[in-house]
Image 1 (cartoon, rainbow, N blue to C red):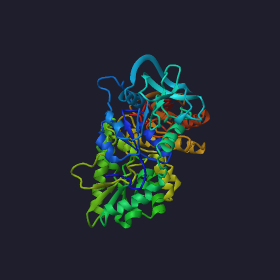
Image 2: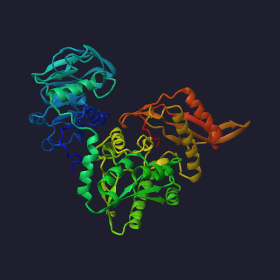
Image 3: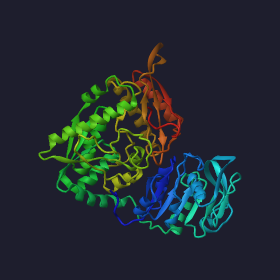
Image 4: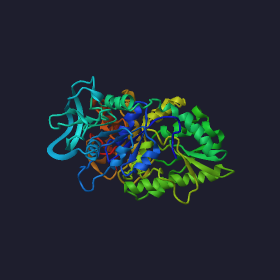
Length: 519
């Protein structure tokens, strides 16, 4: 099923195992051209069937000459589809077209000085010296016949090349990374000026299109939506409601793993904004019982996901005089890709039901946001006039506080973490930092005992970890540089106000190598 049917050009990002494949797709969308990621195992026939306007070959961790490295059928270049190579994609393009790639012993990582050697074509008018982001140990040592070398670095004589008409082109560096100072302009020029993509796609197209698609898909059947209170499920529900009205009932499962005030926010703010029919299910005891004695984070995710979907099934039986046929989910494009549904990548987020539901459940899925990134979802939410408190809510995983407690999940530990989390959110809000950080998970190291001195006595409490991060794409993140005075206030309040916590720590690890959640 194609998720978008409006008349628009499609750019395919062929993923060779890149760290930044999603970021490439996101950069293409930033020039108002729709993009999707496909695996490097895709065939030429499959590519042609999708009728893309252009193809971008991603980076990757392999060497093109390694026996087990991802390959590219040279027939790709016989299709007439314009192709742009990035890093590994640049090298595989060179090798496929008769150039040569080799290990030169001269690696480049991070910020690198790039020199424009031929100011014609794609690089015309750009500064002759510019900063780019490199990450490679191999190099193109011979460009394909008929190609023009347009740029170099001190270690890489061939760092950019293009065909005579520019429709086959590539760079050794990563233009999708903001550290490449003119990278986005290079991508825009190639897509718009060289390829001729029509920049007519925006996230605002989504609501109107999906309403029409959902009317056709659902007909006069009943649907149920699992509402978490986050922007994803809220926007998905708002779109579906506009399509089918009272045929939709939202179910909010209070699994006891939510942050302070979130139940009230859903029941008050969302219902007030949409007028949607809401059923709240109190499942706190069920979830706590199922999680008793469980410490493995992956097992926690699976348990929470299982109980969640069972709660929906039970709710559907209660609310429907006729069978509920459809389940609405706020699945996003990164969820699909990270769960192995987009590029063949590893199943990272096992709690997502993006690969389909359990066999014994009869719901059909409705996923109106499946093609979108988080910032695009927010834009749709604002378009639908949802409250800013919901649209700009920090991302919060489905398993909730269950995976922010390192160790067994108990009511006592949930209460501790809730109190600490509320203090963090309050202080970040008071400091005006809500929009500067993408999210700030608060993690309770429940299985760790920390020695403290409080009230002239020795205490044994728990440490908590603050994990403030900034991100554009959710695939990469940097730790947020919070002001020391804000950190000091947070630490002071938590250790004074939350009994049982006597140490506050700060996680200063980027992603990669560390994930955003502590597991």
